[in-house]
Length: 496
Image (cartoon, rainbow, N blue to C red; front, side, top):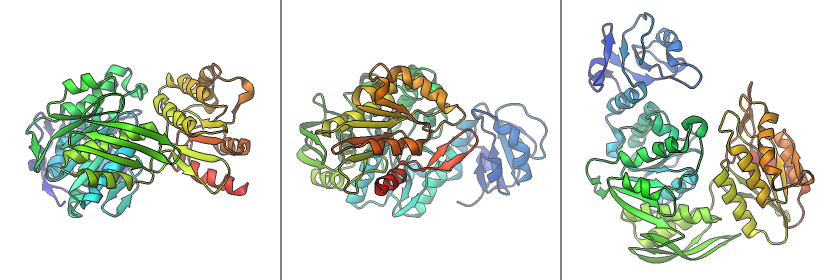
């Protein structure tokens, strides 16, 4: 994208107060003062700990052409544009600056508490199987055709997202699938995007530190479906909402969705449902019963939750006009997703599994899966809880870990600004409901915790290392260190 006259760009904002003489060409959009370049329009976004206005002078010093604010501010040497909702304003302006790129893409959004990452990987595999030039935006990475980038966040800020869409178009990408978090919905990151398909995996309690209560969290998730107004078709496809009929919130979200729906389920009949299921160590087998016909699926991914994820992706494939055999081959081509029930196997006589599970529901799903494939051994679980996040789930996660595990090692996750021991103290009341002291260990150092679990392992045991999955760092109050559960486990296993 090149430049755009600031006066023309600001025409996209309805309610605004302009202080100063706006003139010149906008060269880009920025919300981080340290990344401002000459001619950029700077958005002083409110943060969780500070307000972007505090850095406006730095932005001006770095070359900002003008500053967008949502409150009265001191004098600056550049024009200020005051708007009532600065996050929405950034989404509006970003769409205008990049010429509404989502209108030229086939865009699928996936939201839910758990399963977003795996479902996007499966949908991306379907796109590639069909021969589309595919893009993926999610927690693990961003993919543009064969190019892979590290993620900025699960769902990028509005200006970053529109820039990414614009870049994808220059690389001839036609189909994009992206994870959409509840934070992104509340913070207007995907506002204005024209989705062709939106998918619900499931909704359980999470992020209540941010949303404060389940009703607000549910409403944030629902926005993605409610905003699918306008025409019923886009780029030759019918718009569709893909909904998990087994989810307790199905009826509510279904009632808020103004487009055609495709339902999927495991526990009841739906537009697409699983029959003749086998869930085991080597993968999942099931028959997909669909309105377009039936077909057997041999999924390489393990666990009942991946039956749900594959059914959701199956529905997207049908919505995009794919045939049953194409969908089958696409789903079966996915051999794994980083940090999602990822097995570490060097021929040892016990199994080590790395998983991102960091909610009560996701931890229970992973541990249930591990128990289902356990034959004669024990289940050993290594887990913790993130700092500066919802404290109410900590004892519940402890209780779930104790319910399914013979041995537990409680450790640090990403403690952030909290005392790691204080986080563990919140976990233990739940854990102690299920296991006695001789069957759990508290080891705050995560490396040593993983080392302890592996050294406890005997033939036939399964070790689940939960919470961080694909992450390659650990966040403390005063530092962030390199740390990969997978690399640590591999090193310890090989040293044995």
